[in-house]
Image (cartoon, rainbow, N blue to C red):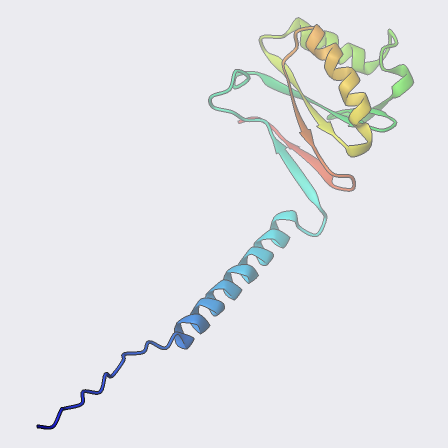
Length: 153
């Protein structure tokens, strides 16, 4: 008797079409991320700081903005620069702002924008702000990026 030979036909799945579709999808997603990132930062390189919070303890308070730079503190919206040496002088706009916020602790707080060269000043004024019991938030921002402020809604 003769034995029958069964040929095992193996079923092979070719993955090339699937992998090419996957590669195209990944490429499209990368392109989309690049386009969205460039649109988000824009050509002018500006960042908008929005003071809002539905759940935070400062949700009902009005923000006052200051920016710490290497040479001093800028008070917004007047954009007045207070030099590092004059921060705590009696006629300093920074000291006036601190007194105003301290007297209205339940209604106001500070948001501090920190530049890389202003970190030392930030640490110094942070201690002063915390000693006076003033609520504060801060946001580190890279050098060269413009800062815009949006009013709380």
